[in-house]
Image (cartoon, rainbow, N blue to C red):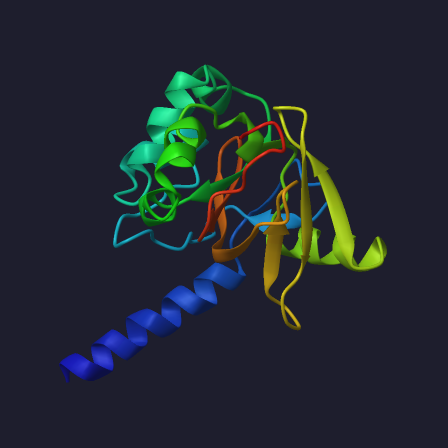
Length: 192
């Protein structure tokens, strides 16, 4: 009996999600996102759509190094504010995999990981296809990240030095943007 009750609740949630109110968000493709969208979790921690990028990063058990970099870069207020941003968020493991000399520098500036606008996976895929396979994204730091496909639907980012990071967790929506969790740390050309 308990198993059937769980199935009934799950079915009600699926049906309810399809009829939820729709709200327009600032999305370059103009897509409507259901107000009750469920974000993927990060290491078991819920990422809330009503929270800001900075608040959700602070809750994530995988992004302590990035939170420190955001604070050191002076980006905390922007990522708490009303602007719309996409952050490509390397995990602590990605920072730990950097060579020692580079890791310290990468941990000081997060502005190369942030672009203006809301780039969810559907927007990225559409623009990559529209631009002939590569989409150049201007970062807050002033550099460029190149989004491209790594397989039929997997999106990868290439930094200015040719290093590639794959998006590991897609489309974590926030009140002021979207977070894409990545498995490596992109570095601008100005980093030594």
